[in-house]
Structure formats: structure tokens, C-alpha cells
Length: 81
Figure 1: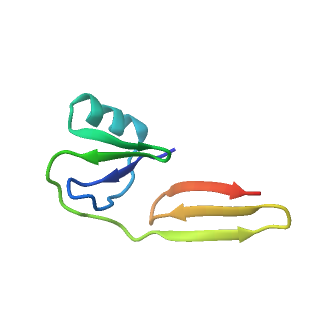
Figure 2: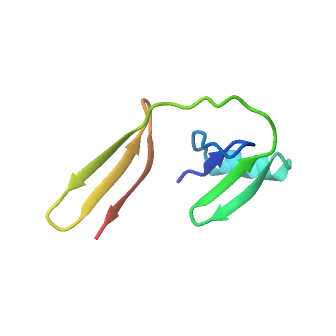
């Protein structure tokens, strides 16, 4: 599971782990923007560093699988009925 992050100006950043999001919220460095999907907004200036991501779609016979990957790890993944 990942938490989507946007910067102070509303531009998307790379997702973070739930633990990192909890720490940012506890220290009042971020605020919750939406619950579905869960998204936080940083309240301090940061660079807009992002990585290239790829979306993979697997067209199966019964389900469609979707995964988002960066260079080193899998980000959100799921299936559609």
C-alpha cells in the first residue's frame, strides 16, 4: 500500500509508505487532502523530484491486472473484474 503525495503547490510527487505519511501528519508537516484514494499534501517547500513510472496491463481471460512500477519497486497494483 502506498500514500499519494502532492507538494505545497498541488503538483504530484512520488508516493510514500504509510509510516512516512503518519510521521508527516503527526509532525504537522502534511495535511490530508482526500481519503479515497488516501492523499496527503505537504505543508513545506520541497523539490519536485519524480521518477519515471510505467503502467503495465495484463489482459487475462477473466480479470484485467494493472500494475504501476518505478525502476526499483512496484507501486499500486490491482485487478479489474
